[in-house]
Length: 267
Ligand SMILES: C[S@@+](CC[C@H](N)C(=O)[O-])C[C@H]1O[C@@H](n2cnc3c(N)ncnc32)[C@H](O)[C@@H]1O
Image (cartoon, helix red, strand yellow):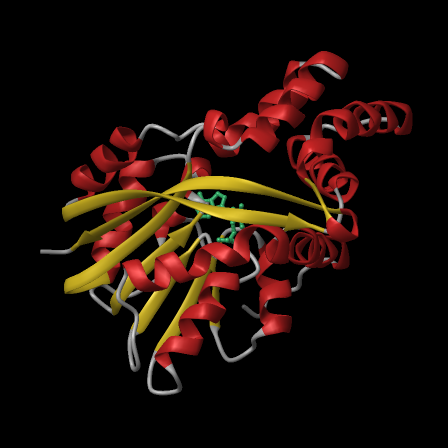
């Protein structure tokens, strides 16, 4: 990644890393590392790598004999990823057109990106192409909001206080909860031996207020939804009441989150 990236985009990437990664995403990387069977010397591709939390976990396993590449279409995410781990190769591309050689990886992993892919079948074909024969894939996708109740609570507050556009933006990450849809895309991509397991991990935010603000100020603007300060205060007040049940010592908000982990092979 050597193109110029604006400071605003890099700041957005840094904020994503600070606000969401330790609280929500980091706990999941072990499932993908295990699901894809990453080990010393593996060549690994992380698709939709964001700021690279999964790629960094993969690197810890592959050691210096391996190779780790992170791919994402968001330049600010990659710039923030590169600040954190410059020894990983960060490549700017979407899952539907990966700029990697055919059959050049032992393992392909992807964590919480598939719901945003415009063409999941094309992405599955690309991940299949990148794998060497016998290579393995692991993908994490959030289950529906029914299995992620803290987000169902915030969606309810948004629906009631600021309208459906904001609520829909928060529904999107939980919109691919039907495992059959993901399995069908992987099958059409060429994969065999597809398995799926539902897993739960605890999210741990410094406070419920910080968790909701991260969504309002960090997530909604991606959809061009900019709430006024009055609206933000109203949502924070209302969500405070609903999220009280997740209060933990030290003012933290701790709650279960649930995702499907898919594993598959290039047979
Ligand atoms: C919720 S973040 C997950 C990032 C990272 N995997 C993690 O666990 O922190 C979703 C990522 O998907 C990326 N994304 C969106 N559309 C994509 C596409 N078509 N192909 C690949 N990545 C995409 C976004 O840029 C973002 O970095």
